Length: 484
Image (cartoon, rainbow, N blue to C red; front, side, top):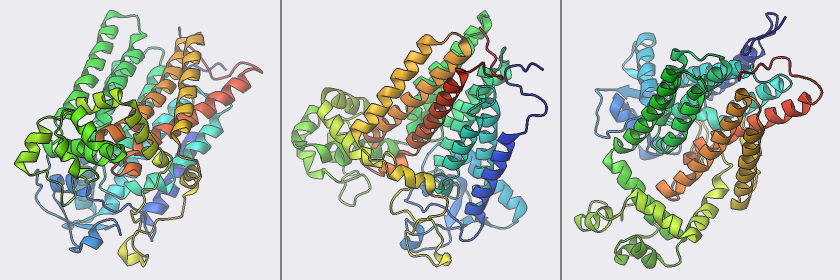
């Protein structure tokens, strides 16, 4: 019996569903079986807590930040002082609603949010794995095994029991990927698929401020997906989709609260460029800033001595600096860029932020202790030498091989898949660059979360590609159907 693209024989065992069920068990064990795992607050929780009306029930600083996770929060009227916009708020609001219905209490259990984050992630994972069945045969179990190993690792799962925005980045990235694969597999993509892609990509862009930098790549990808239908209205829709994603990217940047932009600018200069600069005063002058501000080198926006409220400093620094000026400085001073890359590279393969506790105080663990359960993948990654030349070499090879595969593709299906592979690499490189250009050397591991997720997706894609290519030499792949 012949199968169409995206379909398999009726008796085919649902290995993808079984893999997701296994992932649910492993993730659930970490999030809900004592001692439960989460990720301690570094001060970012308040950005969403204020907007949804959550408050701590503990008062000591050491109990709130870095040392332990807190599972119980008080609920109050929302406050919008932060002005932060994140699609993670949608997930928190759902968790609050579920908590009110199930617990019927004025207290909020963080594990409710963990369940919502995990459930949405597993649903997006199921969509990706189901869609991927159309493109893999011999590598099917390798894909399922690697996916389970990587994304049940505590380095990813611990974020689910937290009020960080990283879970939204991961969930909506997977959702965007799943819808993209469904569009590639569909001989005639429907309008609802195109709309779903736009919605998923928009939620991803608004998950975290640093994601908006990928708006141009997502817009180009959306155009590639829809353009292949030789119908005028579909090609017009492709450009409309690209325009919407570009507009969302720009809106995400300009709608960010002023204080977050100021914090990023301050850290990018004083906790970034001036740390690696042998001549801080000269580099400030090159950016059009008074060299007298070199005295604040190595401070960050949150440092007690940072003059961020001083009117004279605001005039001398914030009235003269911009993100584009920082980017231009790096382009005209490549030695500073290389020095920054050397500083960030050691954190590139780490999934576990150092100094962030994974357990509650009541569990009996010492402060800032991290979980060693389900940490095989993050442990393997931590053994990879974090060197700029290694990162650069891997990325260059990846992009060159992908470009060659695109050029040699004989059908649109393979061509789009290889473009997707290139997109992973370019997006990862973009996230690595945005990390130091947008926030200096602050919180390297945590802010490379999306970089790591994209890198892991690239590994899965590359392994599947290699297995399918080698196995394909001995005969046609039984479930591959292509369109012109």
